[in-house]
Amino acid sequence: MILDSFFAESANSNAITVRVAPNFLHDQSEPSKGRWFWSYHIRIENHGDEPVQLLTRHWRITDGRGMVNHVDGDGVVGEQPVLQPGGAHDYVSGCPLPTSSGFMEGKFRFIRADGNTFLADIPRFELVAPATAQ
Image (cartoon, rainbow, N blue to C red):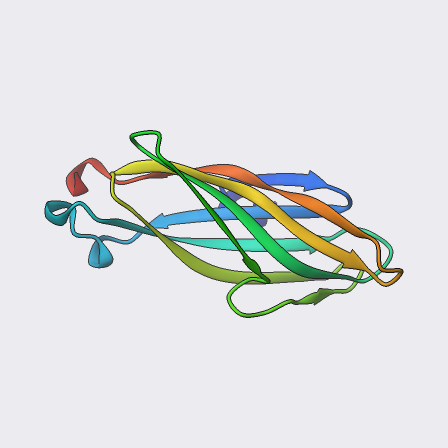
């Protein structure tokens, strides 16, 4: 499947598939100043039989020294999308690190029409700068 070759990682939980494709951004990184920057493309797919709305996100970001930063917030990039059965939502965001490598993982919280909430896993994905950007 083409999607599987584009996205580096995926996780399936509670009828939601979350796919991730990270990309190192040379032009926004300044290794001499201890700053490396990645974008990441997220695709969220609803494989359930009812609409769901994404409410919140929780990220656990770990840099190459093992320092962990937790980031919580409403929605994704300013949106709280509703995913219809069989539907998907894509967005792109970014992450700076003070090291040339690290990883991210997390959870999305959704709500169903009946008011029940549930979590969907965001798979762990590596953030690794190319050797030329060290």
